[in-house]
Length: 114
Image 1 (cartoon, rainbow, N blue to C red):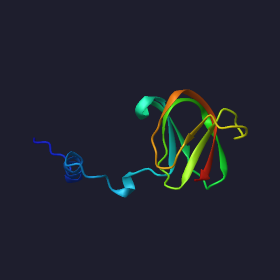
Image 2: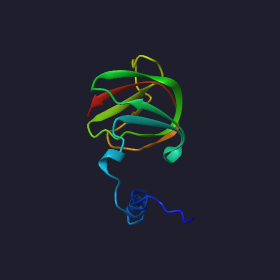
Image 3: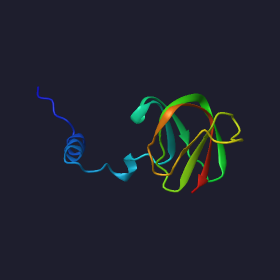
């Protein structure tokens, strides 16, 4: 018996190979990601992006070397305490995926319009 891949899988593979972007529904723009290694690799912590001006406690304290912020409007300010007070240890600008100079311990994130 011959096995065949569903047409949708083949179409997605062809589009990916041809350099096309994924459909908007496949792109996740509702979460900030903190990664344990450079270049958005390693273990990741997912943080839901709320409305502007909200502080979000990180459920798992993250030791991060890189991040991905898909929000087009909100910058993410990373804090070592759980209430977003004092000076942030790092800022992840909107629509960016930066590497950090060194590991940052992150316990909370403040989202704010830039």
